[in-house]
Length: 328
Ligand code: DGY
Image (cartoon, rainbow, N blue to C red):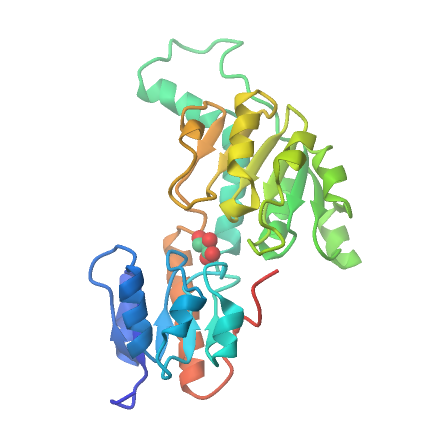
């Protein structure tokens, strides 16, 4: 902190307004090209900065944290999920970790709903027909999907985003069910008209649509494993806007191929951008490139949260979005 201002390294390009404000507030080093940093670049950043602003592309494991300089005191993640950061090791080293919860709730829930509709109403197939010039006109039996109203939606993970999905689903006439580590308070449950299932197996076996909304942690890794996926009804659809690691992607692919699941809507993949290639050719699978939070408003608000966390820390106070342990 030679200049009296915190030295901050940002690992990815951020929206212009965020970068401009960061430059006003801190002694900031921005990324010039929009590619993830290499491990060596990350290590170097952690040797020199007081504060690192990473994104979900940056795997900050105990090896990297071990190489951090003693000046690194805060990892202010640009994003809600912190499964790419070894939070426990960071805290042991006296490095605080913050994230950006709350500001991407509505955008992500919108995307979950969009995927539910896209898969059940076969929207990409209709789009492909139009773009390919293959539409001969309306026919009583073409592009038949399913009606979402009346369907049973099971929400796996009823935190902020899960609840936002529930509110949307109710507006579409769906019946809301959920499984969560902790049951919601009665007034929240009543407000959402949501039915709680203590047993995930029991819930999964009875749903028409399953939406994954829990974070990725050691205890949710492959929560939807081959055995659980097989419990789902063959007519059911699964939608994931959380983290790919919650579903065993190869098992899901096998099940879709075998016609034992009606479809999937995926915004996230078990191995980041390396989705199982077999998924790409399936007409009943809608794949998006992790764009759940990709609104201009959301990405600016994420930046504002990061700055609030860094500024509060710089002023000697506890940052508002301190992560105490890997989110569970
Ligand atoms: C997050 O913030 O963790 C989201 O996945 C980004 O879209």
